[in-house]
Length: 66
Image: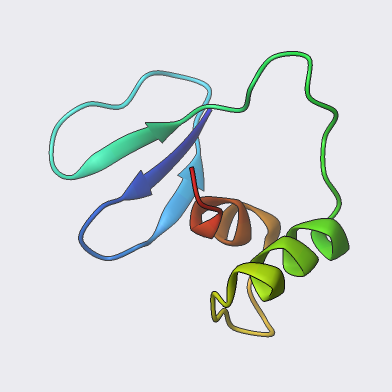
């Protein structure tokens, strides 16, 4: 499960539920194929969303709208 901190934008994967603080579970839609980093970056570029060139996949996924 991918969690993102709503205040800092930090993210991490956890195999157990996390609660408290500002952590929010980011769920991947079922049936949707896993996206590559390149696909995620293309989506972010198209939406005009800035990201670090060193960002890892979980950080990029957390920036995706919606």
